[in-house]
Amino acid sequence: MLIEECASILQWHPEIILTSTSPVSWQGYLIIACPLNTIEKRKIKLKLTLPNYPVLHNAVLNFGKSFAFLRERTFIKSVNDLIKRASSVSSFLRLLQSLISESIGKLNEEYNVPIDLSPTAILQDLKNIFESQSDIKLSSNSSLNIIKLSLRNIHIVLKKTNDNINPWNVISNDLPEISVLGSFNQKISSITTVINKFKQQVEIFDDLWKVLSEIDRNCCILDPIPPKPYHLYRRIYLSQSLSMLITINPLNPTSLPELKFLGSDVDVQRQKDIISENMHTWNSENGILENLFILLNISKFPQKQEQCDSIDDKNCMFMDEECCICFSLKSDKEQFPNKICDNIKCRRHFHTECLLQWLQAVAGNQVAFGHIHGACPHCEENISCPIN
Image 1 (spheres, rainbow, N blue to C red):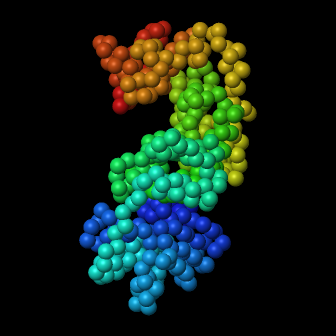
Image 2: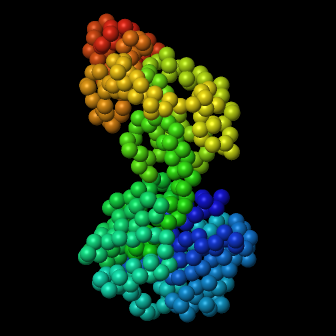
Image 3: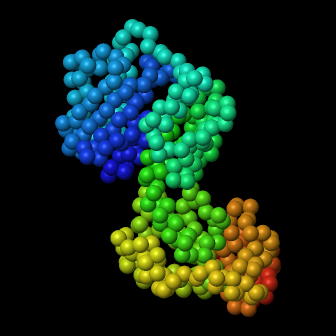
């Protein structure tokens, strides 16, 4: 539950981070829109401690030195009412935003503070980062308008813009795009905002990368080559006529992954039958390889040296993975060949869309049960592919 709460807070309040789990505490800046000018923003420093999390009862809320009204009795009473009404930390913070914005609107004062984008201000921002985030490596070009942040070989690159409200833009990012965690591809108000979000997401994805790393070390990976931290899938070699596309759930990497088999119809159906019988054996407490061995009814995955041993075989998947029709590895839709001829002496690869167009162009080919049947373009044995 805490992970989901963190994801929601990161999405709606990117400058507030979890600082402790015992007791559960969040700290950072709440962004407040100015009532008369929604473009202008004000940051309110706060710390929220929840000794009875996930219940908000007995929550302790402390503010920085921003406005005197934040410590007035009437305002404190309103905050306590919000705590009773809110169903989660994220919803409480959104309600608190509205309350503070309304309270500021009642003050007839000028509170707008422009953002300082001078090199001196940027250097001070970087100094604060070095002092508070020692595990984050930071590098920059000489003009300080491009900054690279690194943590555990994961990188994110920022570029300064001319926007006074959101002066930083993310131009490169190693992290997977997960909607519930919020996107990095938006303009950012400060480097600290990115630091907080970047560090927390690296922590969230750590278990995911461990699972994918175990797959990479023990399986022959056909795609992607090379794997990047943001890739959630692996296409694994199983035999000359069969491969498996596995997609890991980034927020629950030990759960049953999404599996898809690519290859000859006979081998694909045989493998589907095997996993349907073994699906119930998946145990999230076990390692990914142990679960896959049981699920696929195998004792090991083919190793890379086994791939090299068969490289002289004309029919080997690794000699000619390209589509036998368009002679390309990837289709216009960025798909790999996912149909293989069932004839053991052929085993040619095809993109489904290429094979469909080929079979539809030949007069007399039969359509049955959503598949079109005809002759393989290479060996002329029977082959079929789905129409949809």
